[in-house]
Image (tube, rainbow, N blue to C red):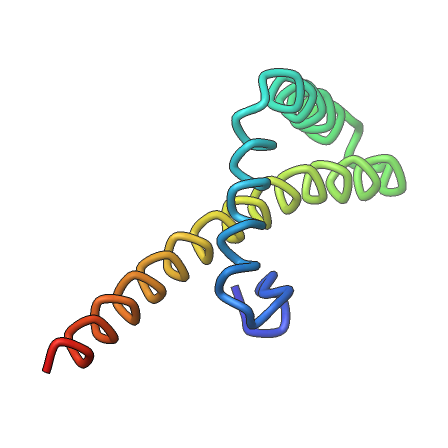
Length: 102
């Protein structure tokens, strides 16, 4: 994923952690999981089964399939960014405590 498409919606690490929690909730939600899986399956079938001459339908199906996968990928990236932010915050806290002890 390029920097231009990376979903770093905020530079604030606390906010990234909060967003990661919400994204994880969505990814773990059974209704959303089922809906995304159904969409991916349906659009994949349409894309694969449509006649090669029907370019409009094939392109549309592929774009819809791509969009569903991209949505899931963006949420996953937000979760991963949040995990990194949690580590950075913990490390910063630990460093601060060590400096205060000296």
